[in-house]
Image (tube, rainbow, N blue to C red; front, side):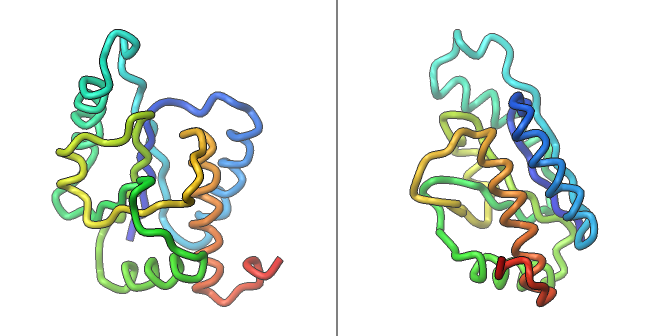
Length: 157
């Protein structure tokens, strides 16, 4: 099974890039993982919120395969504890899905077309984080979930 994290735009801050690389490297010991950056929309400052979501949705949907299990990272999604997320992930991994795709959208969220493709909406926190910071938080939580599934001590720092 392959796990993919789709994100809009680049991560600019060096400390976030370093943290993301650290956890992405660790993930390779557990799953086939890829973080795909979708380039920022050109002239996005000239677009209103709906136009920007629509343009991003076209690029996001172009990255998906028909058999993907799609999970949107969305503030209105279901919240999990780390153990709960690990349990959910374990069930997905056992289900035989070929690709699980997690998606972090742009600053305005997702267009309806992307919501329609998703099987799950998941919230990382009731608080709001920058989209670049969410990347680091997510890859750390994915790593944590995988160590929980393997019974490793990382979760009990």
